[in-house]
Image (cartoon, rainbow, N blue to C red; front, side):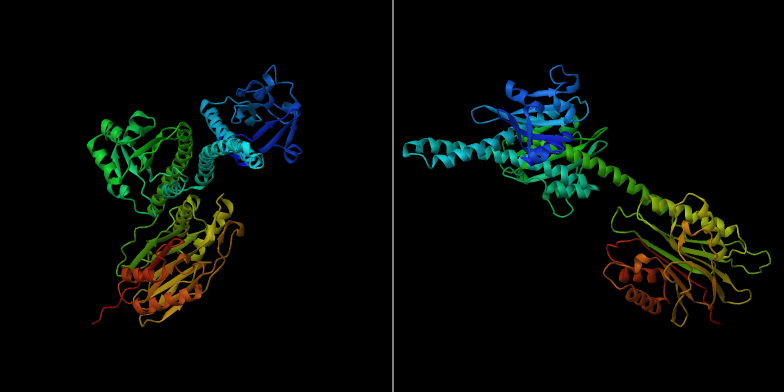
Length: 592
């Protein structure tokens, strides 16, 4: 009984609902939700606080938008003591048609009850009545076994009635269970694949369909959302349908209403031979196609198909229609999230720098997004030339490179990343002679003043050619980032462990330090983000050691090939976090 009350609360979105049985001097509440103490603990109400007694007295539903404005009810203590304002109660009857009580929905605010809501409440009341009748008849059946032999015929008749009512009650419970599971399961979905997966597992019970399909509208077409876990021949054969196609699901979009095909004869009479052949190949006999209405438009179609002829009565159709409402809400939310994620991915990709052409310097980068589409990260890389010094005679300008990781995995993190990337560029170019530490210090100062929720790590480095020499100089400043790796031409790899604290707006302005290393011709610098070496259940130190070994062994070849090898060996096929790799190699001196 509590389940029926809980289902009424969820389907009609009311704070209070209960199953009420009215006796001569009290009202018993075998099922309830939302009723305050002490009434909830006692599970009874005095008749003075009962609106359900009017349902019992009249034998008809009682629907009140505002009890405070009702001449008969406004003085009822239920209004003041229990906060009853809007009330809708449907009679609960036994097998003889006697009204036992009511299934009611209560709101603390005035409410205009919609016809669809009242229809759902009537369907639930019918299932609840069947369950009550089953309990009554079961009790009668047990008592009948103890009476005289002359009452055996009556007991057998009662047992047959009980079996019939049990079947009806079970069907009602199946329908109620479907709506309850739909409200619970579909409220937690994210993308369309997740919605499709949960829809597949939603429909259970005696009338379980052989196939439930989800089709989403896109302009003049319906696109079938394929099951991510199970291959269905339906989804392999017809993935896209024109809205003009002579199929039941396409007719839903044209007529903007539910379409029911009870048997093959109806299909042949009303649809194209292509649709008939398709149904025959799939083994479908009965189909119910329901429109998925969003808040602003028709989103698509829920197609429910049975292999054997299936009678869809009024109660089942009402239940499936109500369930399709939950599916539509989940689809609308998924489409919205997918659109946001797509925009975020495009934004993130747009902010990744095209690598510059550096005279003799090789440079390569690799970005691998997290496997979860909802994990929009703040990882980035950057590389650009610095202005040539006025007194420099060299033809090659210095090169600035950066790899960073802003905390978070959402649109906000991607946005902050774009701002930090631009601010760091500006801070670098505004502070000749382009000190990495000075640029980071300026970034710290700006972040401590501006309203940016900044948190993350990065390495900011400058590579300078040495005038009159084939050598280069590396200058870098590390804000809490994984140590860069430097490979000498002989294959020896060094971790550049020097670092300062991470980037965080609460730390304020900070005196950043920078460090220098001479680079021989053919030296390779490798920068990366923690998604490459940090994974739950794995040793990070072992991953770094493997990275060093890969760089030592393959760092003398193509940089593109080096990054692919590293990604294939270390990055998980379905990474939990974004991965960024950036490699720079100084020019190799040509042999005479």
